[in-house]
Structures are given as structure tokens and as C-alpha cells.
Length: 459
Length: 108
Image (cartoon, rainbow over all chains, first blue to last red; front, side, top):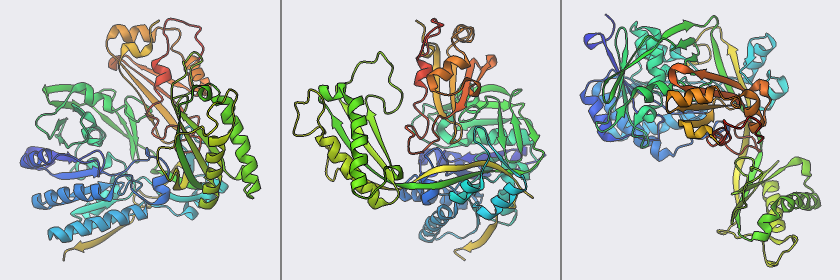
């Protein structure tokens, strides 16, 4: 019989994202029930291409430190592994380095000793180019095939690791694993796979709890979820005594952020949950059985890469004048045209920047329905992306002036068209990136791109 | 008028990766699921019109066991590109929510 106590493994998903938090009550209660592993995903590409490109997390360092301190203390006290995936958000080298620095700071402050494994996930462009030329890079729907020009424009690429590199780190004696870009589910599948549990259940359990509190009701921010794996089923329950998992919250999560309802793809294969059965054990615990794992033919890793687009500067202002709001379509076109002339006079080619007028209240998020009434206020964001920070600021300053002081039919407010909420009105945002690589690359082995380095902390 | 949103207990949109959008509809009951799945208006063509993408790129999957509908389509602008308006894709459910199941000739 695999596993520890009575052939079971109890895994804690501390939070859906390191830095989003969890309650200390939940962590304490989970520890009291006995645990075999604590893990937390720290990353996502949902917050957009900037964070991967800039090498920065999308949560605060303070929040990462708070969560890491509590989890490290708990894992060391219990003598169980702590595994952090997609460290620092993007899971690239600077993200890993930042998370490692925070971890070492916490370890020193708490006087903790442990063996640390840091697993990199950045991929050199040269390797991708070589595999592209040998036909071993494929686009992921609906992205077109990668070109060498697009690859050359790409500034950082990460590959998503599966369970095998995590396993190598744990088998190398790591007490704490900081992994670069990593499958969320793999954080929880790794230990069950090492102990010989059913891979379909192991991966499905991982997928179910990887978002932490997302399967917990009521949904009030993030919190800890406990997954208990046995030979032929798993159970999930919230660690917090006042919260609940329901059949619906658990079953619906398989389809979340996933193009299919019943299957999901992992680096080493596909998990099929069509035959899965969900049973409520009591008002807060759900039992799941029947998921199947179908191994993939070739080992592939998903690649995510970003390219620098330019530098952004923005200005947010309010429009309350009903005459201007009624004229805003024509007015917006005029602003863009006049700014192009002004930019040219500064030696900045209009083709070298984008000026996007985001008209909140009107149509900034979605196309405006034809019959929609006009709002009484519009938030107007002037959004410039140009080749350099200086050019972005120069174009934005012109755009702000032009929007403030251009006539429109019926204009009475000849002193100014915009309400500025504060000064300075113009904000330099920094570099802007776009996703340029979203492909699958064949690997020679599951650990090929993911080297682990070990160190003894506090020794 | 029967808006799709009036039959749902969950109707959400989110990125399925940086280049695709996936919308989940969980119906409140069997009757609502049947009503929607039999509507001549709940088609790839009608959804494509509302989202400005090609109809052959819209994947529509009904799941009777879960009383669910999943719609997946390419994003017209990738997440975070300069012209994008919704990096997480979290507010793109509204055109689907407001789709009228009764009127087969609605235009966006």
C-alpha cells in the first residue's frame, strides 16, 4: 500500500498564489490533522506579458514574505517538503532570484536550516531556434507557427516543467523546492507519483486544489485547501472550519481557465475526468474517483515568451460635459490626427508610437451596443506606447494638451475639456511587452530544460 | 426576450492562455439548459458576430451531465497587447450574457 499513514497522502494547497494570502487559522488546523507536503503556486500568465518581461512579481514582496514565512515555519516544524511553483509569478530567472532572496531572509530571521533546491525554467533562444529548425516546435491553438524573426524579437522565454524536475529535486534531498515556471497541478502530483499512487487521481487532485480557495465557499479571498489521496479516490476539504467544498465547486473547477470541461493537458499526458464521480461526504468534504491519465507520446514543454513593444505613459482624466460626450467619436479621431502632427513636429514619427483613447463609461471594455444611452461622465485614458520612455512622455504631454484644449461643435467650456484628478497628470508606466511565444517544444527528457541547484541553508 | 444570463447561475469569461478566451455557462436547472441548447440563436455564427471573430474559430461545447456550456474562441487582440482592453479576459462574458435566445435574427 503506497503512502504514509494508512496508505494515504495529505497535501496542503496553501493558497492559489503565493502572496494572495491564507488564514493562519486554516494553516494551523491543517497542520494539526497531519500533512505530507505543503505547496503553493506563485505564478500565472493571466496578469499579462509585462511581469515576465520585466522580471517582476505581480504581488508585493511584502506579501510573498508573509506567506513564505508562515509556510516555511510550518513545513520545517512538521518536517515535510515545501514546494513553490512558478516562483515570483513569471517563473523566470529574476523571479526565482527574488523569491530565493526573500526565502533566505526569512530563514535567517527564523533561524531555520534546510536543504534548498532552486529549479530554473528559462530557455535560451538558441535552443528554441535549433528545435524550430528541426520541426520540434509547434504552435498552441490559436497561435500561428513561430518565426525566427519573432523569436529574435523575444526577450525572455520560460518553459513549463511537469512533475519530473520536482521529483528530481525531492529525491536529491531538498526540503524546500523553489521551481521556475511550473504546471500548477504538478506541485501536488509529484509526491503521489513518487509513492506510486494512481496518476489520474494524482493529477486530478492537483488540478482540483491548485487554485486553493477557488473551490471553497463562501469565496472570500484565498485560503488553504487539503487534498487527501488514497488508493482509489481523493477527498478535498477547506482547512478553515467555517468554509466548505461542494460537488459543484469542485467539479466546476476542472473547466476553469481550460478550453475543455473534462480533459486537461499536463506536460506528461492528458487527464480525462469524463468518468469521474463526485460525492459529498458531508457538507464540507467532497470525494472524487474515476479520473484517468493518458500518457503523452512525446515529452513536450509549453513555452511562453514575451517581446518588448516599447514604453508606456498614460493620463487619466474625466469628461463631464454632455456636449463633448455626445461628440466623443469625432473628437477622438481629431485628437489622434492632431497629436500625429504635433509628434511629427517633435521629430517623432506617428508610425513609431500608438495612442489609444480608452473611453471608460462609453466603450473602453466592450463595443458599445447601438441603442445604448450616453453616460453622464466618461473616464478618458490617453495611453501612449512609444519607442523610448522620453518619446512616450513627449507624445502623451501633447495628447493631454490637445485633448484639453481642442474645440468641438457646440463647445461652451472653452477653458478646458478634461477634469484632471491629480497632478502630475502624466504617469510613466515603464516598458510594455507582448506575448510573442506560445508554443510547445519537444524535449529530449522531462528534466532537460530544468536544472536544479542545491544549497544547504543555515548550515 | 430570454437573455442567456437569466438562465445561468455562473456565466464567466477568462483567458485560456494569452491568445484565447473561454466562457463558461453553468445553467441553474435542466429546463434552462434545454431551453438554451435548443435555441437556434445560440450558435457559433451568432457568437462570432458578437465577438468579432470568425465563426469557424468559435468552439461551442454542450455538457449535459454538468448542465454546462463552454465557448472557446481566439482573442481578437492577445492579452496585454497595446490595443487590448481586458488583460485577464474577465469582462468578456457580457455579449454572451445578453444574447437573446428568443429572437433568431438579432444582430450585435
